[in-house]
Length: 259
Ligand SMILES: [Zn+2]
Ligand SMILES: [Zn+2]
Image 1 (spheres, rainbow, N blue to C red):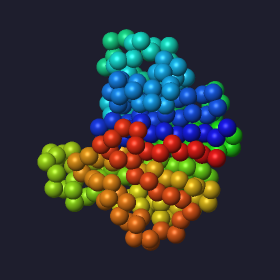
Image 2 (cartoon, helix red, strand yellow):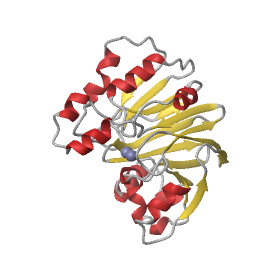
Image 3 (cartoon, helix red, strand yellow):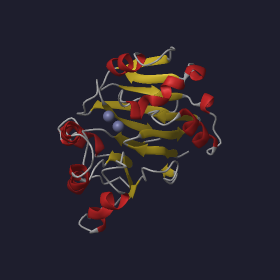
Image 4 (cartoon, rainbow, N blue to C red):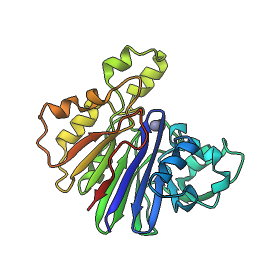
Protein backbone atom coordinates (compact mmCIF):
# COMPACT_ATOMS: atom_id res chain seq x y z
CA UNK A 1 0.00 0.00 0.00
CA UNK A 2 1.32 3.46 -0.85
CA UNK A 3 2.75 5.70 1.82
CA UNK A 4 0.39 8.64 2.39
CA UNK A 5 1.39 12.09 3.57
CA UNK A 6 -1.03 14.66 4.92
CA UNK A 7 0.44 17.92 6.11
CA UNK A 8 -1.84 18.96 8.98
CA UNK A 9 -0.29 22.43 9.14
CA UNK A 10 3.04 24.07 8.39
CA UNK A 11 4.33 27.60 8.92
CA UNK A 12 6.72 29.46 11.22
CA UNK A 13 3.88 29.26 13.73
CA UNK A 14 3.42 25.49 13.84
CA UNK A 15 4.23 22.24 12.10
CA UNK A 16 2.73 18.78 12.11
CA UNK A 17 2.23 16.13 9.43
CA UNK A 18 0.65 12.71 9.38
CA UNK A 19 2.46 9.94 7.56
CA UNK A 20 0.69 6.63 7.02
CA UNK A 21 2.45 3.51 5.80
CA UNK A 22 0.33 0.38 5.85
CA UNK A 23 -0.86 0.04 9.44
CA UNK A 24 1.67 2.55 10.78
CA UNK A 25 0.48 6.11 11.39
CA UNK A 26 3.06 8.56 12.66
CA UNK A 27 3.33 12.29 13.19
CA UNK A 28 6.29 14.31 11.95
CA UNK A 29 6.66 17.07 14.56
CA UNK A 30 3.90 18.14 16.93
CA UNK A 31 3.92 21.92 16.80
CA UNK A 32 0.24 22.74 16.32
CA UNK A 33 -2.30 23.17 19.12
CA UNK A 34 -3.37 19.84 20.59
CA UNK A 35 -7.01 20.44 19.64
CA UNK A 36 -6.01 21.39 16.11
CA UNK A 37 -4.05 18.16 15.77
CA UNK A 38 -6.91 16.15 17.26
CA UNK A 39 -9.47 17.68 14.90
CA UNK A 40 -7.22 17.34 11.87
CA UNK A 41 -6.65 13.65 12.67
CA UNK A 42 -10.37 13.11 13.21
CA UNK A 43 -11.01 14.46 9.74
CA UNK A 44 -8.64 11.69 8.56
CA UNK A 45 -10.67 9.18 10.66
CA UNK A 46 -7.84 8.77 13.16
CA UNK A 47 -7.73 9.34 16.91
CA UNK A 48 -4.61 10.91 18.40
CA UNK A 49 -4.30 8.07 20.94
CA UNK A 50 -3.98 5.63 18.03
CA UNK A 51 -0.94 7.39 16.56
CA UNK A 52 2.00 4.98 16.64
CA UNK A 53 4.82 7.49 17.11
CA UNK A 54 5.95 11.11 16.85
CA UNK A 55 9.24 11.99 15.17
CA UNK A 56 10.81 15.31 16.20
CA UNK A 57 13.07 17.31 13.90
CA UNK A 58 14.21 19.66 16.69
CA UNK A 59 13.18 21.27 19.95
CA UNK A 60 11.71 24.60 18.78
CA UNK A 61 8.17 25.14 19.99
CA UNK A 62 6.70 25.43 16.47
CA UNK A 63 7.64 21.72 16.18
CA UNK A 64 7.03 20.46 19.71
CA UNK A 65 4.44 22.75 21.35
CA UNK A 66 1.66 20.15 21.54
CA UNK A 67 3.79 17.85 23.69
CA UNK A 68 3.05 20.08 26.69
CA UNK A 69 -0.50 18.71 26.41
CA UNK A 70 0.48 15.11 25.76
CA UNK A 71 -0.05 13.84 29.31
CA UNK A 72 -2.99 11.73 28.09
CA UNK A 73 -0.86 10.42 25.24
CA UNK A 74 2.22 9.51 27.26
CA UNK A 75 2.11 5.97 25.81
CA UNK A 76 2.97 7.23 22.30
CA UNK A 77 6.67 6.76 21.47
CA UNK A 78 8.34 10.11 20.78
CA UNK A 79 11.51 9.74 18.72
CA UNK A 80 14.12 12.46 19.23
CA UNK A 81 17.83 12.76 19.61
CA UNK A 82 19.12 13.24 23.13
CA UNK A 83 19.71 17.00 23.02
CA UNK A 84 16.27 17.64 21.53
CA UNK A 85 14.58 15.44 24.14
CA UNK A 86 16.53 17.11 26.95
CA UNK A 87 15.46 20.58 25.79
CA UNK A 88 11.79 19.63 25.35
CA UNK A 89 11.69 17.89 28.76
CA UNK A 90 12.56 21.21 30.43
CA UNK A 91 9.18 22.55 29.29
CA UNK A 92 7.09 19.51 30.29
CA UNK A 93 5.36 18.75 33.58
CA UNK A 94 4.83 15.10 32.65
CA UNK A 95 6.86 12.26 31.25
CA UNK A 96 6.70 11.01 27.67
CA UNK A 97 7.60 7.70 26.10
CA UNK A 98 10.94 8.97 24.77
CA UNK A 99 12.78 6.89 22.20
CA UNK A 100 16.23 8.33 21.68
CA UNK A 101 18.23 8.08 18.47
CA UNK A 102 21.57 9.47 17.43
CA UNK A 103 21.58 11.97 14.57
CA UNK A 104 22.66 10.12 11.45
CA UNK A 105 21.15 6.86 12.64
CA UNK A 106 18.69 4.71 10.61
CA UNK A 107 16.21 2.31 12.13
CA UNK A 108 12.98 0.47 11.46
CA UNK A 109 9.69 1.44 13.05
CA UNK A 110 6.46 -0.39 12.22
CA UNK A 111 6.19 -0.50 8.44
CA UNK A 112 8.69 2.34 8.01
CA UNK A 113 12.43 2.63 7.66
CA UNK A 114 13.56 5.92 9.15
CA UNK A 115 16.81 7.74 8.50
CA UNK A 116 17.91 10.89 10.34
CA UNK A 117 20.58 13.35 9.25
CA UNK A 118 21.92 16.63 10.64
CA UNK A 119 20.82 20.01 9.29
CA UNK A 120 22.30 23.42 10.23
CA UNK A 121 19.85 25.33 12.46
CA UNK A 122 20.03 27.15 15.78
CA UNK A 123 18.31 24.47 17.84
CA UNK A 124 20.06 21.91 20.04
CA UNK A 125 20.52 19.20 17.39
CA UNK A 126 18.29 19.55 14.30
CA UNK A 127 17.67 16.72 11.90
CA UNK A 128 15.92 15.99 8.65
CA UNK A 129 14.28 12.63 8.04
CA UNK A 130 13.87 10.17 5.21
CA UNK A 131 10.94 7.80 5.62
CA UNK A 132 10.87 4.70 3.45
CA UNK A 133 8.05 2.24 2.85
CA UNK A 134 7.94 -0.40 0.13
CA UNK A 135 11.00 1.17 -1.55
CA UNK A 136 9.37 4.62 -1.79
CA UNK A 137 11.13 7.43 0.00
CA UNK A 138 9.89 10.71 1.44
CA UNK A 139 12.31 13.42 2.57
CA UNK A 140 11.35 15.89 5.33
CA UNK A 141 13.77 18.81 5.45
CA UNK A 142 12.88 21.96 7.32
CA UNK A 143 14.50 24.63 9.49
CA UNK A 144 17.95 24.90 7.97
CA UNK A 145 20.10 27.95 7.33
CA UNK A 146 21.61 26.60 4.14
CA UNK A 147 21.73 23.45 2.05
CA UNK A 148 24.69 21.31 3.03
CA UNK A 149 26.43 18.68 0.93
CA UNK A 150 24.88 16.07 3.21
CA UNK A 151 21.39 17.34 2.40
CA UNK A 152 22.18 17.34 -1.33
CA UNK A 153 23.35 13.79 -1.01
CA UNK A 154 20.24 12.66 0.88
CA UNK A 155 17.64 13.94 -1.58
CA UNK A 156 18.87 12.31 -4.79
CA UNK A 157 16.80 9.16 -4.67
CA UNK A 158 13.67 10.55 -3.05
CA UNK A 159 10.20 9.99 -4.50
CA UNK A 160 8.74 13.00 -2.68
CA UNK A 161 10.17 15.87 -0.67
CA UNK A 162 8.86 18.40 1.84
CA UNK A 163 11.32 21.30 1.92
CA UNK A 164 11.39 24.56 3.82
CA UNK A 165 10.85 27.79 1.85
CA UNK A 166 10.58 30.17 4.76
CA UNK A 167 10.90 33.80 3.76
CA UNK A 168 11.05 36.34 0.95
CA UNK A 169 14.04 38.59 1.73
CA UNK A 170 12.41 41.98 1.04
CA UNK A 171 9.36 41.04 3.14
CA UNK A 172 11.65 39.98 5.98
CA UNK A 173 13.73 43.17 5.71
CA UNK A 174 10.61 45.37 5.86
CA UNK A 175 8.84 43.36 8.55
CA UNK A 176 8.41 44.54 12.15
CA UNK A 177 10.69 41.81 13.41
CA UNK A 178 13.63 42.90 15.59
CA UNK A 179 16.95 43.22 13.79
CA UNK A 180 18.47 40.37 15.80
CA UNK A 181 15.68 38.02 14.68
CA UNK A 182 16.01 39.10 11.03
CA UNK A 183 19.75 38.40 11.22
CA UNK A 184 19.08 35.01 12.83
CA UNK A 185 16.56 33.98 10.17
CA UNK A 186 18.93 34.93 7.31
CA UNK A 187 21.96 33.37 8.99
CA UNK A 188 23.73 30.06 8.37
CA UNK A 189 21.73 28.49 11.20
CA UNK A 190 18.41 30.14 10.40
CA UNK A 191 15.94 29.35 7.64
CA UNK A 192 15.87 28.80 3.87
CA UNK A 193 14.57 31.68 1.75
CA UNK A 194 12.43 31.16 -1.34
CA UNK A 195 15.51 31.80 -3.46
CA UNK A 196 17.62 29.27 -1.59
CA UNK A 197 14.90 26.62 -1.88
CA UNK A 198 14.51 27.34 -5.60
CA UNK A 199 18.23 27.28 -6.32
CA UNK A 200 18.61 24.01 -4.50
CA UNK A 201 15.76 22.36 -6.40
CA UNK A 202 16.88 23.89 -9.69
CA UNK A 203 20.40 22.58 -9.29
CA UNK A 204 19.78 19.07 -8.05
CA UNK A 205 18.99 15.94 -9.97
CA UNK A 206 16.13 14.00 -8.37
CA UNK A 207 15.10 11.65 -11.17
CA UNK A 208 12.53 9.73 -9.12
CA UNK A 209 10.92 12.68 -7.39
CA UNK A 210 7.36 13.43 -8.47
CA UNK A 211 6.22 15.86 -5.79
CA UNK A 212 7.75 18.67 -3.74
CA UNK A 213 5.90 20.46 -0.96
CA UNK A 214 7.27 23.83 0.07
CA UNK A 215 6.66 24.06 3.81
CA UNK A 216 7.36 26.24 6.87
CA UNK A 217 6.27 29.35 4.95
CA UNK A 218 6.38 32.43 7.19
CA UNK A 219 3.03 34.15 7.67
CA UNK A 220 4.61 37.59 8.06
CA UNK A 221 7.62 37.41 5.75
CA UNK A 222 6.40 35.31 2.83
CA UNK A 223 3.37 34.48 0.72
CA UNK A 224 2.33 31.40 -1.22
CA UNK A 225 2.68 33.47 -4.42
CA UNK A 226 6.22 34.61 -3.56
CA UNK A 227 7.29 31.05 -2.72
CA UNK A 228 5.95 29.83 -6.07
CA UNK A 229 6.98 32.74 -8.26
CA UNK A 230 10.38 31.45 -9.42
CA UNK A 231 8.92 28.02 -10.17
CA UNK A 232 6.16 29.61 -12.23
CA UNK A 233 8.72 31.36 -14.41
CA UNK A 234 9.43 28.00 -15.91
CA UNK A 235 13.18 28.15 -15.33
CA UNK A 236 13.16 24.71 -13.84
CA UNK A 237 13.13 21.72 -16.14
CA UNK A 238 11.67 19.28 -13.70
CA UNK A 239 9.82 16.06 -13.32
CA UNK A 240 8.18 17.00 -10.04
CA UNK A 241 5.16 19.08 -9.15
CA UNK A 242 5.71 21.90 -6.67
CA UNK A 243 2.99 22.77 -4.18
CA UNK A 244 3.19 25.40 -1.44
CA UNK A 245 1.54 24.60 1.89
CA UNK A 246 -0.58 27.65 2.81
CA UNK A 247 0.69 28.83 6.22
CA UNK A 248 -2.72 30.11 7.33
CA UNK A 249 -4.77 26.96 7.02
CA UNK A 250 -4.92 23.49 8.46
CA UNK A 251 -5.22 20.39 6.31
CA UNK A 252 -5.34 22.20 2.98
CA UNK A 253 -2.53 20.32 1.36
CA UNK A 254 -3.68 17.40 -0.70
CA UNK A 255 -3.21 13.85 0.47
CA UNK A 256 -0.04 12.79 -1.24
CA UNK A 257 0.17 9.13 -2.18
CA UNK A 258 3.80 8.24 -2.65
CA UNK A 259 3.78 5.29 -4.99
ZN1 LIG B 1 10.35 25.89 12.73
ZN1 LIG C 1 13.42 25.83 14.23
